[in-house]
Image (cartoon, rainbow, N blue to C red):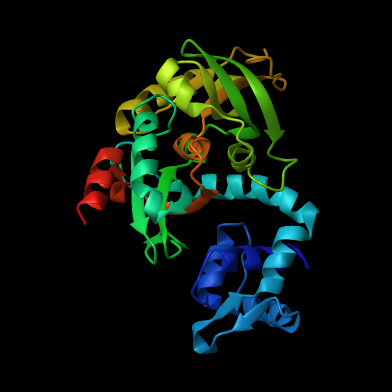
Length: 330
């Protein structure tokens, strides 16, 4: 196994249908891997020989159970680097234009049982009307339908929420480099963020930290919404001091455009909520895009989330209320 083979397995694992070498070559670009179709076929042959992929005629390949096992339990060092590399790659590929409201943003994709759909959507409604989401724009799909590159499993409802890494992409296009440091849980008291209760470094984790916090039931998003005191998902990032004024101005421009959420800037070279920053850096706290899903998990409804899962055209999203109305009246 090497980085290329590992990444191919990660891509195949996203699809239920076979994927060909042409599509794989395009997908690999989003992970910073530029290969010809012929070279992709070479690596696929190696994976076939190891019984980690299987040929499905001219349609392409699918991942096998052995491949999934390798993906989930082996090559830990590569998986550690995978998260931070994916953040950087997706931020670069984000091309959302704040003036035209068109272009690709990054979506988290979450699934939950379709029979629990009404209950889950009711729980999420309160969160989407709060400050604890990046945006109230979403995409809903039923089993068998696609959200970007992801097929929703049968018997499930899929929901795409805007990932906070989209902010990295918007800043990057404006010439502001962003370093994603930690994913964490923030304690909210009387509506104000007071401290991080848990932090996991993006560079030191093989799984997206926010997914870990959701499944560990370490959040209390519902209480944060209803009582203004609780625990929400957020991330800690850094930007250069010289770009602070421009970053604050860009943040104000984003809010009326549908990209919002709690964004706190620290002071130059000073800790933010007790988290230290690098030399000539400013700390920045961004609300997590998976907070609505965390609230659903808190209620006891099973969820399965894939953070920063796919690129998606912003103009194809609907407001939460519009999307729910369309779903209920289908």
